[in-house]
Image (cartoon, rainbow, N blue to C red; front, side):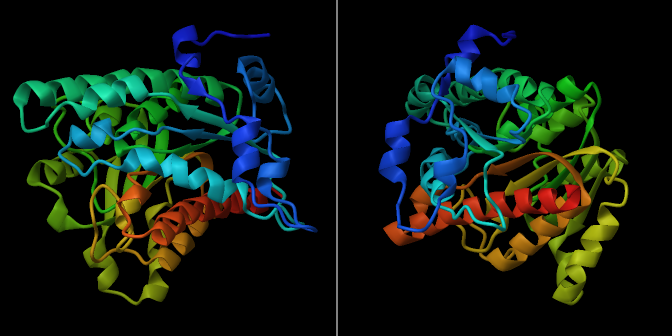
Length: 355
């Protein structure tokens, strides 16, 4: 069986045990949940078998960390997204409209040692800040190698972050596997094109653009008041980067937003594309940055559904979600459920497009 990924990287993949699935599943007579029909490898051999299984189209991977966010002076908490997302996905219905049988849950990267090291560091100390950015770069190498393995087997990746720093290694992994640059659509109030001052959640696309891993990059919903002049200079000097600002959207009826996205993505349709969703683009969603005025959950789902139907999606990356920051247990569960709904929205759109 082909195994070319660094053993140290594979050792970081923490599989979801049958016991965990059994404990999280809510069973009801006459109903079937996705957690009962999707594939869940229990060890490395089973993981490689799933990669070679042509019936499996989607690989779900958790990246539970917030080191890149800390290195960008953001609110920690994004490591909790996987914990709240997983039971929500497992308990979604498997039915005649969507079975979930072509999904495999790979598990989550075990980054506990790096998280432990980061927890003792303050971004307000120059030495600590440098160390946080070095730890982020270490995550880059881990994520990029595992993603390249998944991409090289023709699977569509569903990545649950984690900070938006992981966009860079995900793009790098796919670009390497496909031997070509990616088109990337990013629903975000930030462009994440900050200076290349050491790795963090605010400059993943800067590094990807610099390394020519991206052919087209569009930010939809960019809020100009949260992006510095360096970012706009970068956009101005690079014709591959475009954006639709939230100001632009506010100038038209909401019924026109989907048409504006159509026009923004005219160049994307024939390119392998990554779909990035930063949850801080959603009004009031518990994320690393709180947004008092962004997309409603309903509008975000509509936009994502439309984008997935238009693009040649190779991966979906949900970043910056921090359900643990929600005020009540029910709101934390709802935050995880929203992530699972986005995932199914994208998969269903891809399935309809390919049917």
